[in-house]
Image (cartoon, protein in one colour):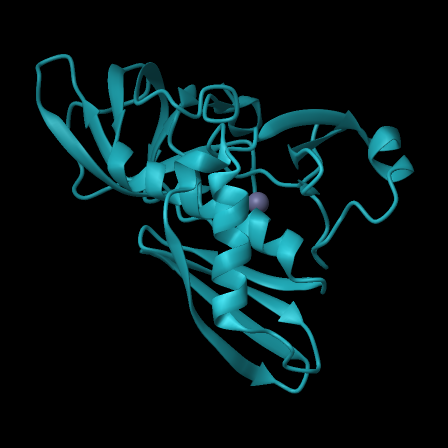
Amino acid sequence: MSALALHTRPLFDELPYQHTFTARVLAVSELGVALDQTLFYPTGGGQPGDQGHLLLPDGSAVAVVNTQRDPLLRAIIWHQLEEGHPDIRAGTELQGCLDWERRYRHMRMHTCLHLLCAIVDAPVTGCSIAADKGRLDFDLPESTLDKEQITRSLMELIDGALDVQVQLLSNDEYRSLPNLCRTQVAPPQGNGTVRVIDIPGVDMQPCGGTHVRNTAEVGAVICDKIEKKSRHNRRVTLRFA
Ligand SMILES: [Zn+2]
């Protein structure tokens, strides 16, 4: 099999709430283990790569410390192991288990940052998500933002228990929607489709990340800091309360 034929099926898009899966090893390299399918989300769009473990047929477990796409062959997802395991080689069947507590926090914070986009009317220039906090950078010359006001507005949307929907739009459909893309980076495009996260009436934007189904799952959050990072850049940091 040539390297170009390798492809990891991303199960996290369709099954964001599933914790375990079975897979077959495609390849082992210094980047880790590539599987034919995975629930492990690879670092991207400000969301960290998933952690967890791989369970071998003999019952032994190997920790996954990070997940990332191949820098050149983007369709391949590498699971970086804490340490190598001699029984993991191409063809090995194994089970993958997510560190679900950590991943679910990423999902809650990621959805919360989409709500923040709806509250702050400015282009987004950066995004970073962690298990306890998250932040967005806005292209905003004047500091008109208020921490307490942002916290109140976020909690209204969270307490409103709004549906979070995933839509797959064709490139043409995507281009026909004006001002859809809030970020200044290019939207994720693959297979002629754009994945869009829609919180109807609140926010709609292209995103490849994992999200909760309803804003109520975000839970209590606080706007922690508003920092001036440059003349045109305001950084807004949120954390779980
Ligand atoms: Zn997103």
